[in-house]
Length: 445
Image (tube, rainbow, N blue to C red):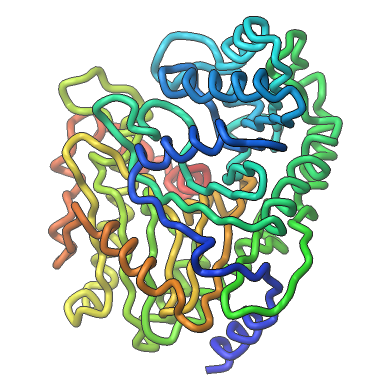
């Protein structure tokens, strides 16, 4: 019991920003999230800071960026800044023709001349080594948080949606802390450049600045005035495996569990340390529920009637990891202590992240709980400490919503095996396994 006690002490001493229960709202659909985003943008008086992996040039992306320019034109004093990943913004979609979103940003800037600023953040020298995966919009004193980026499917613009979690928190202290992190911790550095203007430097041209920026990010975290309260929110950020406040807090959250753990992840590929924590929890008798997307609900899934590309094998690789995990822990599935549920809803996709611990803690995050998030990407999250259960009903409702369209795995044979995969996928996976590249791939996925 030594480790759970240490973890409980760690969490008890973690500083937080006190909030009232009615200052935190849970939104339950992508369309509600988009509507709230547009409402807050139109009402903004002082500042709008948006950070996301990308803002796509499609119908939803154009609508959001148009709304931001319009808000700035109506109130010229409004401070509007958008941060996206430097590399992701300058390439097209995987498997599709077309250039990056940076030209779209420049066209909109030339058209409106409003003063909206869009920055590219190069976390690493190349995209596959790590990206900007921070989440959270600051609009005046409101924090709107979701793992979603900005495009048609994330915002359910057309007939498909990518299911995520959506939260709104009213707190001047929290909003100020997250805004300061972006302004003084990121934008103020020499590695970060405007994407809505021409003459964007290449990653090679700012190689030394990116290296220095990476070291800076490893020490950067949110600054705020902490105080006691029955309900607090702690903003956390981290980059890299070592001395990462977000990873460390997730570890202690898991180790602190006494009765139940509820985990959401779109890609089944836990870091080794998380798998170790789960093993210890099961041995201690803690009930664990894991919600993961079916391979057909993965954003990389390619239906068999469409042309195949290498990226289309990724969901199958995740599924092979899931099958091995399920087989290893079958005895806990049999006694109902471990509940693994696959989410699948028509042709929609699944992108939920985060966890609930007992009836006290909730982690809202964009962290996928995979090796890439654990060691390569710049991630953040909001840890909610609900000491007196004020949010119990809201979070119970959220969990029930998440469980909709999910089915429990009763046996590892419920998971498709490799020999049932399309022939091209089988050949690719066999090649990967033959060259012993699986572990390397898992660290990048």
